[in-house]
Length: 450
Image 1 (cartoon, one colour):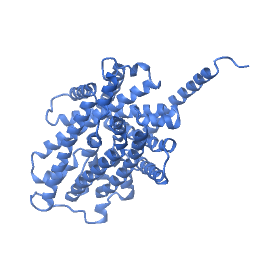
Image 2 (image 1 turned 30 degrees about the vertical axis):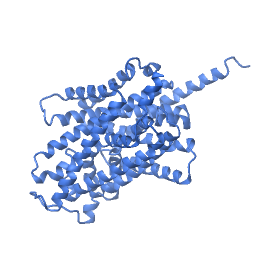
Image 3 (image 1 turned 45 degrees about the horizontal axis):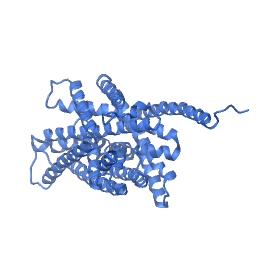
């Protein structure tokens, strides 16, 4: 009775809360910082890349939410992959996700530490990283209720920072406030599409990074009071993000010529630096920290949830599913924190380029999982022709983003490293699949046959 009551209390999320949660765990450093690098590659045409990524992301969440509405499963995307294609699919999907998120969290914690040194330059990076890791753990241990409230609060703060930029930028464009540099409107094809089609193609992956986190939203959708509201929550979230991204990036590239952006500063700080607003760098440094921390905590929730369901279904040691007094099993926490710690140490010790290649690979691995999500409804749902077309287009858009990395020298090594990771996990999956087949034979035919 007590357990069913607590389960009912857990599954009481409203659709708009899930939308806000999605905004909270999606707007991260990929948008606040990574968009600068993408602008440098493709200029104002980055807006086209954001449209492609938004449509592709919507297709993924549409597939995930429809499966959730039909049958909410604790393991989310990996459980649907398993049900659709067999144990090998659930095993590989879960472990690909775990490895990629652990690597990404290491880079998030390193980035958070660097941002924090903007105010406290003498504090060692590792101390900040350890502090953020402990804070993240505390949130996860307290439970989903706190995670949801925290993400909602942080979402409001992040949106407020972006809205502040939009208002100041609009005032600057209409001449209400004056700066020491004229507005540099893009006024030619070369200004609108400086990198050509290949530059735009290469930048699509960075637009996808700004929408990353949709699979965590799928895991949280099982907490909805009415799981059938999941598609509506996703539509509202993605429509809101598209408006926020298009307005803010559109204003930034209208105010400043594309070649003045760089990968070390937020595009919003660069766009406003001519207006002598001393508070702007501090506001956006704070927004970067909040954005990085909220996506890190959401990822931490995702990797612990996936590891628990892997253990429950026999695809990881069973000890990873035994909770005891903690909200999360201790072995799961230990393994995840060891993975993150090694990722942070790698980030601090490896040459910048090498670690950047690894995190690019991790981001690509998440997109490979998205293709699994788009493929699963074909087996699990009675799809209309329109749905089949949508999910096919979604897959094509992801392939455009992945293949675009081959045309950019910084992203290209990450593509091949991602294939290496997939190869290793695929090899382990093949070995495990052989063991599962032998085990099934022993169960079906316990006696020797003549």
